[in-house]
Length: 197
Image (cartoon, rainbow, N blue to C red; front, side):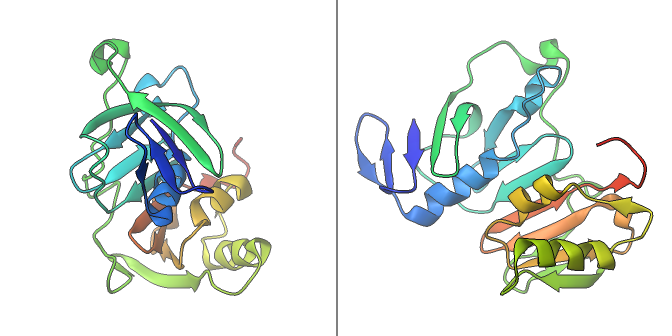
């Protein structure tokens, strides 16, 4: 199945029109798919009934919406650009036999309690607006709001911040940043200053 933003279409042998926001959201979520062969479970996009999620272990992208073109399950992402996404349903061996399973993102230590409509996140006292400034200025604002013993990778920040309205800094910065946008949640884990990243 191919999703393209430019022409706003889906090619699944039926040629149906898709809203641009859906294609953009799916492409954004797929940006968190791992490219590490040692973590095969994280190399997949997970589609649930009302959300789509991907993670590489350092960042997590979740789209809180439903899309009837994709049935629930795991999908391989052989190709992704900023305007095009190719995916196909995973029908390989059981993931547990490959050294892991897809993470349970509903565990409270991973994804905090949030409210997309009210733009609130439990356990966050600081937030930074992601409007009207360059990506570099937003990055600097977020770094200043974080604990000085941790930092975040700029490229991962840039990919996660795309299309987001606000980033929440958890009171315990080691637990990661929470990004919020329209129907989108992103989680980005920091690294301790001096660690390799």
